[in-house]
Length: 344
Image (tube, rainbow, N blue to C red):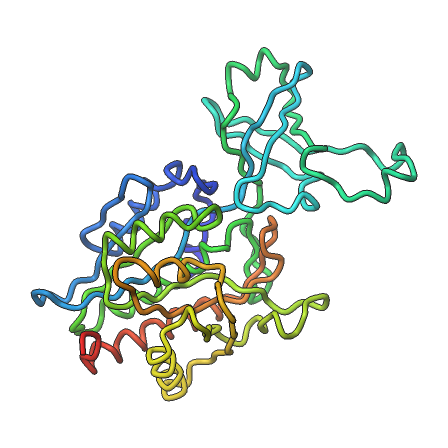
């Protein structure tokens, strides 16, 4: 698992600019799956085929875009201002290291006025993204040869192992994608009666258009979407978070197909796969929300991996939650394959 996470989390791919990493991701798909292809948006697909004509298809989907920034302006002093791509919290930015991905990759830091010279009024104010800038050490003229307005900016964050935890900048949702690959390893050893399509989707953080187009192209009989959910922390609301390290999280609610959810829970109980339940009263805020209404409707399940410090450079997750999510996917796909109930 650790090697897989290393490969996934080092891929560049700010939301809307995923093609920077899609070719490398395609190579990873080709090493594990068959019939790999990439669409015009940058979605990457691969298959596990059962060999039976007109077999039902199950789509396993996770997004691979990451939060980041976009160059907005280069001022006369060479400072680079920016806007957010995918919901970056300005509070995490001061003191951050970044890479501007232009004609060249340019390292920079996001500085701010030191506390020693802040006025009393300034100390009370929350930092706005418009108050921040990237310092690259280059002049405006030098930067003009390397970058331009509209270039993506990635936040720097190493993959760090903390006992049974993993910490990185892009585990939302590269951890979900890792669980799909781990599930695929189990499913390839099984005699299935269904085809499996695995999709790494673009643009979840900025509109979920990758999921829409991907589901339309695949037209599956069932979709299992994997994303992250908020892990429990001392300052988190107990009714809006899930414990980290205690298994996958099964979503229930109007976005989720009730029959499949009930069957999934029964399978998890029978297989002794650890899980918790999360209830969402409407929009789950995941790709499952849009996949559900593609074409004439696609039954959806949503499995989530508890993650602490979402949308920061230190997103933290438990390795066994990734594995339990993979186990849950594989167990349910095998159940559906054995029962032959997808088109009844």
